[in-house]
Length: 300
Image 1: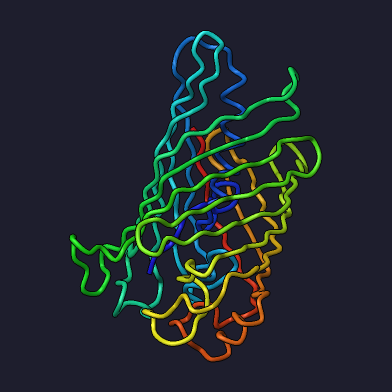
Image 2 (image 1 turned 90 degrees about the horizontal axis):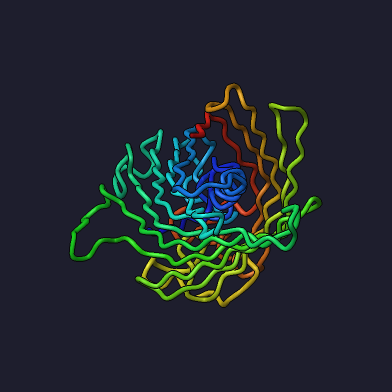
């Protein structure tokens, strides 16, 4: 199994989806980049929570509860008022809370995803209300307890991701471009709309709608026919849709809480037929499902 991260787990707190992680980085980066400084600034964020299942790109990897967390550190390169963006590293982890996948993946900390990234917001105006937020990252997905795991043949994969968001005072359109280049040379696009609403100084809500397109070679977390060796038989398609609501509550300057819920649905008819055939482990066998999680957040 392999997985991409693009994503943060709720404004930096979700299953790891590459888009959600980029959203947290975008928010923190914008705050750091407003400080005029001639030295490097260190900042970061993290989260840890319990989720109803392992959901990725609107499809289920595991329908039973998991613990997932993410931690990221960055250096903001604002030198003599010249903005060079930020460089950073991040790590995401998964722990299954049941024995469902124990025979093949282990249970505690059975996945670690490491990333190295660079990002910058390109502002269109002096007031910094409109701009293009960009982030690129290389992600390595590692499964330490994978059955028959061997270092020369890792049962892992690597992604090169690009995330774009049009920053503005209204609704933010975003797109994440994922290229899996280690095993299957697959491509995936995740795109949609989101809007963060500050209810008060502590509580913020972010509704969103997200669609996922995958090409023929990107099939690992989606339903498929036959064995895992033939998991890329379904043609390129608009695969899934997800409607979500994220909530964050800041308790102190550095600590807070998060909660998120989402409704996910497989769109493509061939993928839905494959889900009915119950092929491809558990991937996508739930064609339409609700998903959510709660946890704690950290900012520094």
